[in-house]
View 1: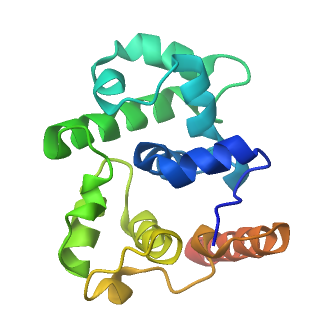
View 2: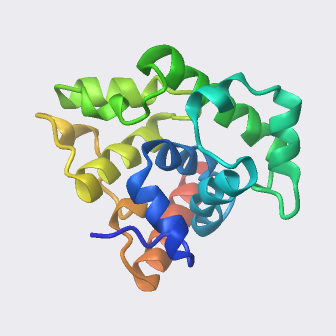
View 3: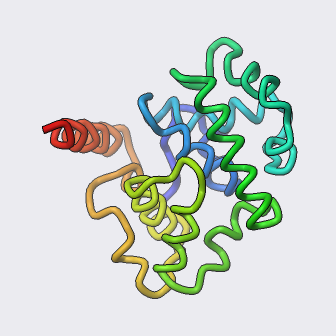
Amino acid sequence: MPIVWTQDPAANELLETDALALLIGMVLDQQVKMEKAFGGPYELKQRLGHLDASTIASMDPDALDKVFRERPALHRFPGNMARRVQAMTQAVVKDYGGDAEAVWRDARTGDELAARISKLPGFGEMKTKIMVAILAKKFGVRPPGWEKHAATWHSVADVDSAETMAQAREVKRDMKARAKH
């Protein structure tokens, strides 16, 4: 099932082919439309000229902040997201030698997969479950026991059209509303 989370085929392709782009998109998927969040890695790559975990991790935080704030801003909260993306890339460099795909490629069990993802800055319980579902459904990453760690609701992992994107947005909205009560 190809990724069609943005209106830009090049942005979608980047999410399919670059593990760091996928992780950055997940970090940005908060308080903005999913299309904006998942288009962010492509826009960031255009602005930086690369998506290299080591380079982003070691950038001057103010310089990265400035890149996120360029118009149009990469996120509704560009400063916070610049810091989160940088923290996540620093973890990828420290724990995986800058190889984002190693986060899941080397996981031998679902428990290990979920633990590796949830250890990344910007990945709480919900994002970890969604990421496990994305990896299983879009990339065939299914170490034994992955199912108990995957989102069981309709999420971006299930999006393959404008209709399923609208459905994922509705589910997300309903979950937020229930969480407030």
